[in-house]
Amino acid sequence: MNKDLLKKLNGEQPLTAEESLRLDAALESQAPVASVVAGLPDESPSMSWRSGLNQRLARVSRKRRAAPVWRLGIAAVGVAAASFLVVSLLQPVPSEDGPVKAAVAERTAKPSLEDAILAEHNDATSQASLGVHVSYRETGF
Amino acid sequence: MATNRKLDLASEQALVAQCRRQDYEAFSKIVDAYQARVFGFVRRMVRSEEEAMDVTQEVFIKAFRHLDRFDGRSSLRTWLFRIAHNLCIDRARKHDRGLSLTSLEPTHAEDEPMEFADARWDPERIALADELGAVVEHAIATMSEKLRMVLLLHDKEDMGYDEIARTVDVPVGTVKSRLFLARAHLQTHLSQYLESGAGK
Image (cartoon, rainbow over all chains, first blue to last red; front, side, top):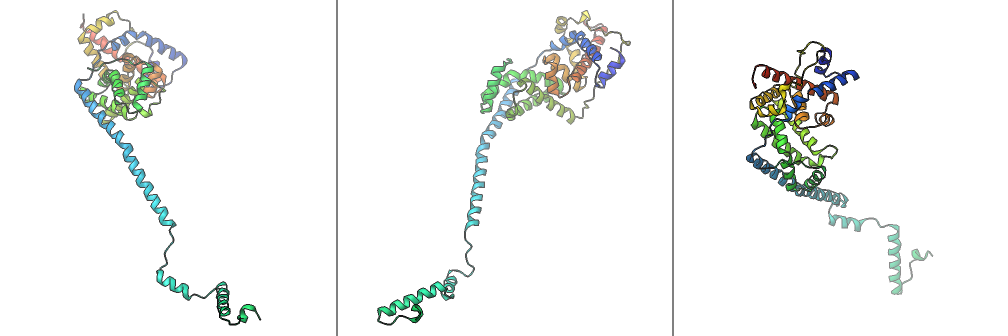
């Protein structure tokens, strides 16, 4: 392995096709070193480690199971709030004067033309039933 | 003691599907299968055994929490080691351990081939030598995290270049460069040990 290629490897610079081939060959020649690493003993974590992990996993699992109920509650509150808002907005706005004043105002309001004709008709009908002539205003003559 | 069984692809996929249905027992089987390998990797990546135990627990807790993000494009092993890699990098940053590459100065004359196939490095003989094992562990511990990571994933965990590239998130060429430098670093340490007359 020459210095230039080694410099490139240290700097993680891109290699030419030829240099890549040389690197592949060098890696193959390092096989004995690889087998040394492969032969290193495996270590297993202890039983107490596993017990601790199980406890932590159980806690995470409980939280995950509880999460949907919690989210459902939040959603229900949200829907209720939205419904209340809609109902509030759609309700008619009550008169500021109150119902009594509104009724009095309705009675004392100027009658419309339809109301006047109807009142005149009722008046004339009542008079006719008592033998009084029909009002000229109703018959027009 | 938990077993260290390897999972085939079908049983791995079945276990993942069960885990997504909140099956806690299924996840325990995944832990059984991978705890020793993940722990072995993390143990050589962090400073102490205590820290390794802590990080390994974090790996499995994180995997359990985010299993829905595992899309099955890579193997479960690659995914677990990617989590382990990220956590080890975070720890190294926390401890202000730089992730700079170990610079390897050429010790051989230009164009002189490096001799790796030394007869003294018979793997069986080396495996039996506890002292040499300690030298190897020390050599691994003294190389940069970047080199160590690739060395362990390739030579210890038997991952391919592509799998390592996905795990570590670097190009395949960079994986090869790092692997070469890591092995060369290890070779230098072993040469010094063997030349000092030990192991004879």
